[in-house]
Image (cartoon, rainbow, N blue to C red; front, side, top):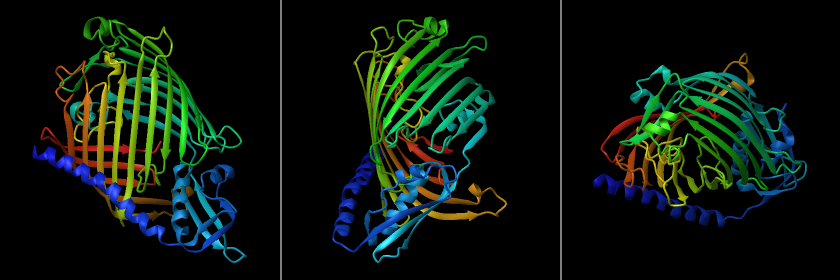
Length: 477
């Protein structure tokens, strides 16, 4: 019980800091009023392919605007990070120089473009995370996907991405996708479209003791999945985006799965599940650095209706909400605190395939990486302190490609505390983590390299008293 009390108190203390500290900082800043500088022009160098109008679109200021002189450094740094968030540049510099007229400045932007074409060999794990593959699947190379994943992240200079993927091994997958954030003159509308087909000989057919149980047959494809979607996004300003998506899914499982192993997989012994979906997403993103935020906040809300036609095999409505705050407390120390929640309607038994809760993708409670907790609804409170103790940029010789001559590296110590809960009224028998409060706390080492490449090494204890070492990586693609 003492661990539970510490987890609750720790989370509320962290969250309370979010309320107290902003008010203090705001009270200080509002008391100062100083001179303003007028921006005469904004000049950009180094964007050989990336369109100038795309760069200007991401800035908080434009020629003719006025900014407080005392805030100039902070504003330029925030906008430098906004340019890095595009993923188009390996480095960027923004500086202000005096103009010919007193009280006026020129803003100089220098960028170094990334390599835009990445035809890289594909080698990835088929399991939910690295820890499951390493420990429970005993590092089996049979559970590895390989192939070719070709990405062009700036096809026409408009930050538009083209993806071609051919994957083999544990599961086969073929994918074609195109994304462009600005299809109109005002750069407010974006388009994202994708089609894919995947299949595999092994399938998680049920959950027991909060572990996935697999069925494998090398002679028969256990599941085949078709997915096609198109998304129209609207971003009238810099920080908020609304997106409307139309999605079609067709999933087919082997007869033996539906008839013998789990008739509830699609419910009532079905082997095929088809449905047309409508999704609305709202995102407000005020983070300074998306791969590893230090300051700002993110809010996301999503409404998803699976099955909009009477003939669809699935009719399930889901509402999702996430809010995360990032706050620097002092030099080299930042606090992260966030909540994430989902609920579902109607309140009747869903197919097992559509009952995923925690433990899939990026939705988890630290310390439970070896488990899944399926369910209708869930909620998570996550908090972490980040303490930076190493921050250096390594310079390499001129014979290196320009995009790789400077590689920044950060090392950070983290203290983590998570609480979560999953409501599972239909499949909780034999899964003791459902319908119980989950909490995990521990510490870790975070590595941030080349701006958007991250690795998190964490040592965490859960409410079962289990300590574990967990690894999570992100390559930034």
